[in-house]
Amino acid sequence: MAKKMGVLLGALMAGLIFASGAASAKTLRLITWGGYAPDAVIKLFKEQTGIDVEVTVSNNEDMISKLRATGGAGFDLAQPSQDRISGPQYEFGIYKPIDYSKIDSSLFIAPLFDAAKKNTTLDGKAYGVAHVWGTYGMIADKTKAPDVRDFTDLCKPKYAGKISMRLKRPVLIGMAYAMGMDPFAAYGDKAKYREIIEKSGQKLAECKSNVKTYWSGSDELLNLIRSGEVVASGAWDSTGFKLNSENPNINFVVPKSGALGWIDTFALPAKGKADAEAYQWINFVMQPKIAAMITDASGSFAASKGSKELVSKSLSKAFSEAFTEQDIANINWFPTIPPGLEDMEGKILDRIAAQ
Image: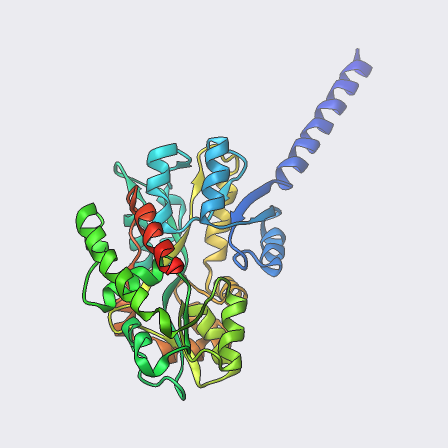
């Protein structure tokens, strides 16, 4: 009897040890953008928590597609942009609400934290936490295009054949703002929105003779600017910062009408199995030193309070030269996209490309 009891106790202890080991080897399945989970950060996180991080690099469309296909399963933490959360949640139910009591809000830049929370709220529940943010505006070589201050300036006759842009919705919206219209304010009125973007599309079509080429990837744009073939372009700020580190005459230009702002968030998939680990990761990466590592890896700044002062000198310099406090206050943040608007925009952009 004693021998049997000893065998049973031994088996029980072995089971407890195995269970403890399994718990300490928990894996967080993260679907995110390139640069948002650098190897060095993952290593530090595991050293402090014992949690492995399994990274899938993705984008907004792919994240939504994967989570929609599984009903919100397969990942424990996702990083969609703030304007791509409440719409898919309403249609597909792929996220679960954020428990903000588990988030250390003192780590965040308050306006960005509040903006992400507000813009990801559906039926009184919020689904997103701000992580990385950036803007769409322009890049210019100030020695060759010193008077480019808004999207309409890209259409000046003297820049014929010397400018570029990506023929996607940000330039359509940015041009509308530069023409004195407010497309985001018209999101709730499809007829009004169509009127605005039709005018913007007409301006872009008239500007086509100035376009050397429509860039499709950041590497293509980098090479066009570096070679001097293009002196100004519509672009994301991180591309401008990168070029500024190579040539101080080139940098991101904040449009007078306001840069278009995006925030990539943290969101919990509806059927994720590691919520506790997800909250640990969020609070870990929002620490200023860790957030600065992510900024240096991605080229985009984090919504982490105090992290901007810890990034590389070249990146900090480029940001400070491009943005004033007023520029930041004047950002036009992308709101949630209502159904049907992207189809409307796509037809206009296709028409411009075909002309």
